[in-house]
Amino acid sequence: MKSRYTFSILPLILFSAVVYADSESRWFPTEHLYPAYLADPYEPNFHMQLRSYDESTIPDTGASRWDLMAGAPLIIYEKKDTDNSRHGWQIVFLTGLRGQFDNENNQDNVAWEGIFGLQAVFRYHNDFAWHFGTKHYSSHVGDEYIERTGRTRIQYTREEWRAGIAWLFSEHYTVYSDIAYAFSLRNKILQEDGRAQIGLQYEKPGVFMGSKVGWYSALDVSAYEEDDWDKNITIQIGFDIPARDRRWRLGLEYYDGRSQYGEFFQNKDQYASIGVWVDL
View: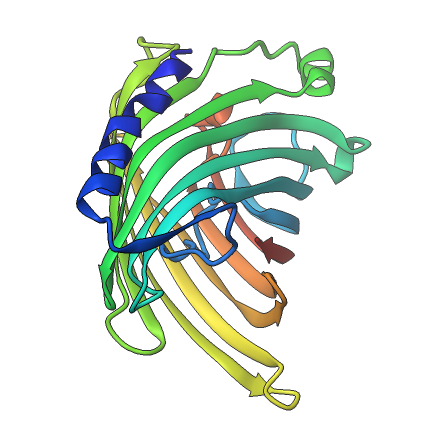
């Protein structure tokens, strides 16, 4: 793992601080300039999903599984335009830990994964935002699954450069796109460098219960070079409940693509789930 590369974007941030001087600085704010990817399985948040798998090629796993994540994109520092609080830049630290548990095999841990990264976010236009940085994925096979099946780890670890743009092209719609290139791969025989992602989401706040509850829908499509650019599709729809500096979402999700845990990336999954998500 070459996590030292994660901090190589700091000169870019310092340059931005110099050229964007007419601004206010804050440590650890809570309002994000770049929108969250609501249907992205790797977006750091808190979630709890009960998944029902219609198809899974991971051997010796059941159709019913819990998927859990604890994480958040944490804003470390920001500079914002004194005349427009929607314009400025931020340093954001990404952190998340997720795991999957098999309900048909005594809640055995099938896999778990750590996610972290550092990125610079820029927004100087009301409708467009950009980010650039690194993201690290370290995937592991669950000890109970290893003990039961004898499956050993393939050492799936990926650290990548990542750049993205989000276009908030109307009051309720956002379209986004990311491209990524891995500069560090643990298993160079199986893994390859490229990754691409695109998504579309709709958010309508304040529709129900005296304007306290809204609804949303989101689509995320990703592809990896190591899978010959096969599509991974996630669709999510649900209710949106803001609560101070966080947002609760209760929704349904459908997924069709490669396993979301890197250790099983050569396996295919298709599931429907009900879940709760908390965005910080």
